[in-house]
Length: 149
Image 1 (cartoon, rainbow, N blue to C red):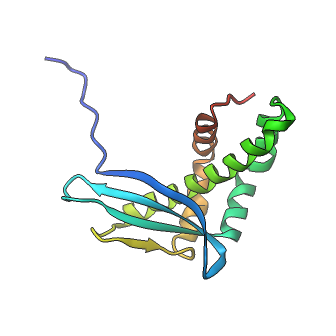
Image 2 (image 1 turned 45 degrees about the vertical axis):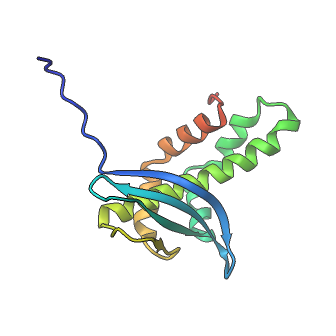
């Protein structure tokens, strides 16, 4: 018998469905949609996660996103940088929305389609962004298939 403990399976399976997209009625917000399935649920739900533009701007500043991204992209040919930069910005929004969704899951979500509004969990997300800035950067680099350097 093995003495290595079996890793605990996550209680929720979260998958990005689409986003980021602008909120039509509120141009200062963007959103992503996630499929969320709890192991005990028969089916999953769709959760819309909104971010206010000022929250996104604070997150960029907190993690030094623009300067970091410039350094990462400096080694690429000039003609490719715009595409990578645009994709990196989308990945940042997706990462921030995923963090906000994680916070909502910690508080508790029901088995129904829903929305986490742009003005919800603002302070909590700000703290989490600061704590998780390395993880956000790493995820972006992985998705872009780039190395930091």
